[in-house]
Image (cartoon, rainbow, N blue to C red; front, top):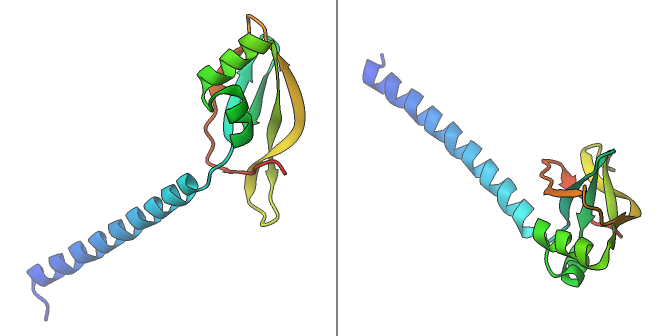
Length: 127
């Protein structure tokens, strides 16, 4: 017959094991997502609508960075920027993903706003 201490120890061990497994899964996901160099997504907001665009490593190098400031400077400096518009779709494995839809040209305007866009979906690089 088990004592109360043994039962409490068994429960604590099971909880600790479950916590470690969950933490390991979260870390594995974070490191796999961070290990892939990829596309940074941004939301372009105008008076009329909002779209999500992606800036890949080559485009980021051309505009001088892969953050909101670099994108804003590129739009202000040249007046226009050609990027990939992104949309959600189902991938070959059935999972949802952010994927390139079409190439678009963004024209700089005073009422245009650029924000970073975060997603939990897999982001597909253009081919």
